[in-house]
Image 1 (cartoon, one colour):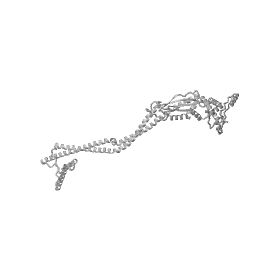
Image 2 (image 1 turned 30 degrees about the vertical axis):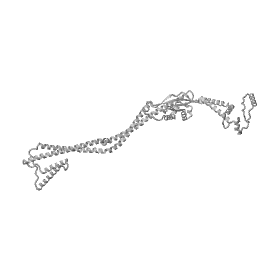
Image 3 (image 1 turned 90 degrees about the horizontal axis):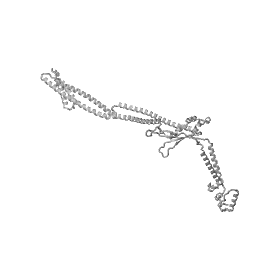
Image 4 (image 1 turned 180 degrees about the horizontal axis):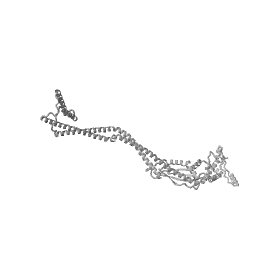
Amino acid sequence: MVGNNAISLADVRRVLRRWWWILPITTVFFGTLGVVASMVLPKRYTSETLVEVESPTISSKLVEPVITEDLNRRLSSMKEEILSRSRLQPIIEKLGLYPKERATAHIEDLVDRLRTAVTVTPIEPMAGSQNRQLPGFKINVTFNNGQIAQQICTEITSMFLEQNARERMNQSSETVEFFQQRLDEAKKKLDDEDAKLADFKAKHPGEMPDQEQTNLQLLAGMNTQLDSVNQAISRAQQEKTFNESLLAQQEATLAQSTSSSGGAPTETLSDQLAAEQQKLVNLQAIYTPEHPDVLKAQRAIADLKRRIEEQQKAGVAPAPAASKPNRAESPQLQQLRAKLRLDDQTIADLVKTQARIQSGIQVVQGRIQATPMVEQQFKDMSRDYQTASENYNDLLRRHNTADLGQHLESAQESEQFKILDPPSMPNQPSFPNKLVFAGGGFGGGLVLGLAVLYLLAVLDKSLHTERDVETGLKLPLLVSIPSLDVVAGQVKRAASLAGAKLPAPQKGLSA
């Protein structure tokens, strides 16, 4: 009897002595059943290939790769596409798979069967390595015919290699095309901004910020020229005044000589008044109103006007102008008149130059005054141009990188799939495995036999020991009868007569 489902070593020996034959029966039966099952079940053959992921031959530090998607994700995407109906149905039709089922089963069911027969397993990177990129993957195809399994594995492997090359080439081409479109748009925008800047500069000549210093220097030079012209005009006017005074002296000397010779006066008071007024105008152009020469000319004019008024009140006609002397003027007088005409021409030219310089100064000053406003507008336009230029240069760099990546893909110098182990030709079936089935049968039979023995031990309610008596009857043990040798001798004789060996009675068995 087992108390509280706790089996002692004595219980194990007792159960084994009585039911030992159960273990060999269950072990042999289930082992044989496993062997038979491995011989009866349909055979499955597995063809396997190993595909390596080759790194680019040129370092990514030199040429930035165009495709940066994680290989695990890309491999999963390729697997879903390759194992789709549109890709597996041609394999079924090409290799003539499932000839019996094709007449009754739907094509979707056959594709599902073939899909379950294909297994793609990524290879994990070596532990401790810094590179966590996927080193490769395995493709397993399980089918009821080893040769067909190899053919299917070859087709699937070729699909993976072609799909990877096609996807990388398409993605690189699309990347180059994308950047080319963006680059053309950026170039057009940059040209527009450049045209705007050129038009702005054409509309504001001399007002650009970089021309401000030039304008200041030009203004300083023009002011210097204006000072020089003003000084030249002053000198010319002084020269003219001096020549006029010399001419007046010469004419006065000539008049005196004519008067002394009995000639008539050379000129009237009106002519003298006109000459003095012209002289005053010339002096005022040179000197201030308080200058002595100006004041002297004004007194002379006032005196001539007074004399003319007195003659008019007295009723005396103005003296007629003296007739010119019969003889010609002296060379000195003619030279002075020529100098005066030259002085007038020089002053006129200098005045024109003065007006031209003053006009230029006004233009330059207007440019300098407009420079701050033009500078702000130019900054806004330059900022747009700079942004467009930076965008264009960035897109150009990316386009060149993508173009290099496309050349690498075309030359197959980028990341590629390479077959390390071609699809194997299985000679032995991968399912069922006789050793696995036989070992599993024997192991399962042994476990089942032990479970049966444990169940028999638990269900045994007979009393064999003092502990069983106390546990079963729940009464204290008062006395025990020792085993007698006579009884033991009789038992031995009975056992020898029966030809069987019985175990000796236990000592201290309770009554």
